Length: 346
Ligand code: NAD
Ligand code: TYD
Image 1 (cartoon, rainbow, N blue to C red):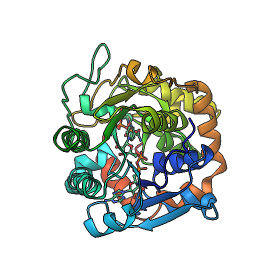
Image 2: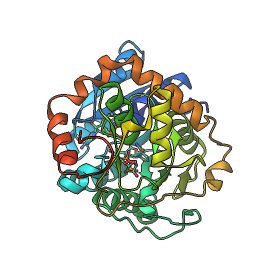
Image 3: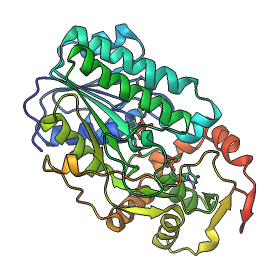
């Protein structure tokens, strides 16, 4: 998807997992100027953009999307905005949700207000399939009601609806994407797939919540970035686009595949107490974005194998992320979980 029609694109949260992959993708597709605005929370990492340091047209600004003056300065001269900036981890939202409301709701509002006054031709709000809540059968369509069931999903649903309201009320050219669980290089090791891979590489087991039969639809980050670029270039203002890959797998199956890819046995999988309010399944109908010409390209088995190799080869990237404050979080989140079967507590 060629991206040449914009003068300057603002990418918020561009030092995070999907955002950094997206910035790289934008330049590959011919973008001229890209400004990244990122607060660099524990999840933001300037190292994710290190290879772009000398890229002509690239500028990094450290700042908070909830700070109107930082947003106004970063948005100056931009004709398109893609908002990735968010607090993103469900487990953290269950421990402490204030930052989720501040960034995902209030921060989105500041971006929308500023965009309204600046005037932009496209505003893409990156939302999630979790806003639909759990879907035990069938697939969510964009018109389905939102029934988020954890603080993260509720804060994303709020940002998503605010963005749509700014289109309905003021004609702001907003498009919302609702993507599935994403995996690939540069994902923070707190999330299930990188946590599993890096735990095994550190000699720890994989903590599978509950029975491990919860299903997620795994979307490779490159497919997710391509989909957002399709929406940016071809989407219709006021419209919502689901992005799924059709790779539904129970968590236990994913854990088994990772163990196998690292040449280990299932003894390294440990069932621990379930997450409260754990959604059993998400599934979206992606026919609307497919009608724009997008389709997922990376098969899950190949994408997972490539991702495992990436974490094996990039210990210098993730080892520091699992030290310091993360170690405290890990202890808080997992230390209280009772082992249900097999192995010893991590
Ligand atoms: P991430 O946690 O890796 O990155 C989030 C980034 O936002 C970080 O760089 C962080 O520093 C930045 N940030 C946080 N608060 C900020 C603030 N107040 N101001 C400026 N920057 C701030 O997240 P991700 O997995 O890359 O997700 C990106 C977006 O995609 C999020 O909006 C998320 O809800 C959405 N999404 C993620 C997935 C997934 O599976 N990862 C799936 C669907 C949708
Ligand atoms: P996660 O990567 O946190 O994404 P989300 O909660 O947004 O779907 O988790 C993916 C799935 O893996 C989810 O069903 C919860 C489960 N999970 C575990 O079983 N163990 C873990 O340690 C983590 C982090 C997640």
